[in-house]
Length: 169
Image 1 (cartoon, rainbow, N blue to C red):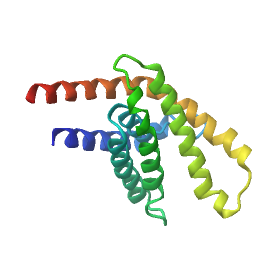
Image 2 (image 1 turned 90 degrees about the horizontal axis):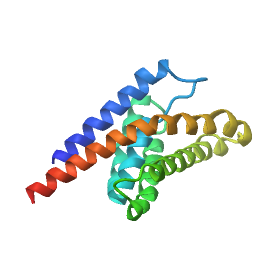
Image 3 (image 1 turned 180 degrees about the vertical axis):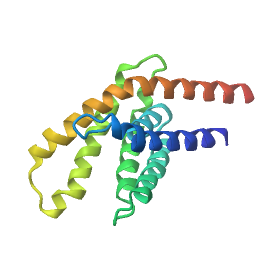
């Protein structure tokens, strides 16, 4: 129950930061995807089910708050990424910080490609290289830069929760 409350608080904080503060410090209208960092980090640290559930709730939050005409697109994208990245759980090491950053970059690339397919390609917009150069790659770079700090914080919180649950058992 404590873990669920912590996850909810983290989702709300990341969403609020992503939609309010990072709008003002975006570079070339590109913002880091904090919710994606959250989903990928926990999928890597906790496995497929945690990644998928966090992805579902993060995506539904974005879908409902953005007011778009398609409800569930972000939920599907985040959920797929959380589930697929959850397979890397078996490579999780408590003291490794380079592999998670690479995995976050891969997750952001998958997010950009899936978003391109569902939002642009299916509507007949075929200028993929422009989209890759102007949106996907800068967002990956910015997200990876922010994820260096955010992953360490999420890792510390996860270790605290693991330590607390180990004491209770």
